[in-house]
Every structure is written in C-alpha cells, then in structure tokens.
Image (tube, rainbow, N blue to C red; front, side, top):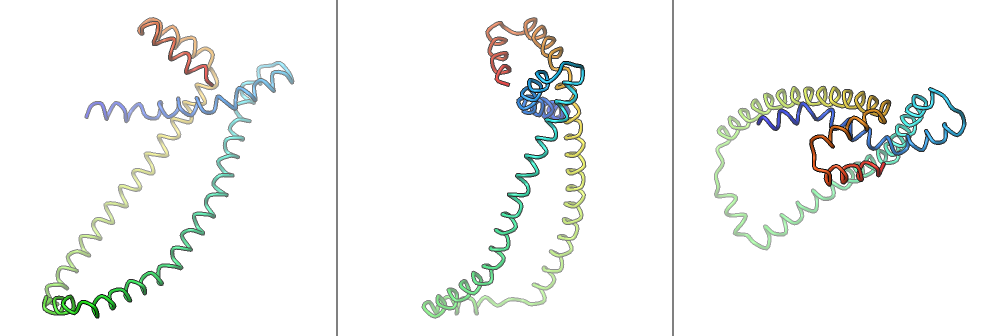
Length: 193
C-alpha cells in the first residue's frame, strides 16, 4: 500500500522524465540546426517551442487519420448488428424445430411475472446508483489525469530547459551511491537520446 502511494506521488515526475526523454530526440536535431544558423541564448527556448509544435503536429495527424477509421468501424458494426440479430433469431428458430425438447423445457420453466418485475425494478434502481457512482469516479479520474499530465509536462519542460546541468548532477549523484558498472549502463542508455 505504501509503495502504491509512493508511486502515485512520483508518477507525474516519472511521466515527465519519459516525456523529456522522448522529446529530447527531435529537440537535439532542432538545436543542432538552430546552432548552425546562429549563436545565442534563444537556441534552447526556440528549440523547445519548435519541438512542441512538431510533436503536436504528429499527434494531430495521427488523431485525424485514426479517428475517422474508428468512426467507420463503429458505423460498420452498427450497420451489421441488426443482421446479426436476425441470424441469431433464425438459428434459435431452427434449433427449436430440430430439438423440440428445448421448446418444451422453456415452456415448463413457469416464470412469475410479478417477481420478475420486482427484481427488474430493484436492479434498475441499483443500476442508477452505480451509474452515479461511476460518473463521479470518471470525473475524478479525468481531473486526476489532467493534473498528472500538466505536472508531468511542466516537469518535462524543466528537464529539457536545463538538461546539461541536471545531467551532470545526476551523474554525480549516481557515482556517489551506485556501483560503477550500473552507472555506466545507465549512462549508456541515456546516451541513446
């Protein structure tokens, strides 16, 4: 339980590290291009803005390509569903003709309509409570997700803005507390970006 709480608190920062790791790849290319064009203090801020525009452009392109396909798929399922129901009804009719014992067994069950209505009413009222509870849980989850992503995004920008200084500090910290071979392996993975 304590570990879950700790991970919950750390998740925005872990997500921010992941975002910074991913955004650093295109940002390095943009920085190299801007450094060749001119030298100045604006290279880092401009490269962050250009990288954000590029990432948002890629995400928008994916959304605009994938979202219509999802809509088409849902419409196709919706259009085919009535035919599926008719085929199920035809199959049930066919089975009842071939196996008359099933029809006799269903007719001999003897349903109490008042009891069925009462149980259905109880089920619907509990369903209303569940829907309200689910709606509150959904709203809480969405709000929590937005806050987590906002913190992660700001943390990623912070990392990207001072990545060299943070990198030096992390290397000193790792060398002080971790074995040398583990530090070398972590640094090898970090150099991938």
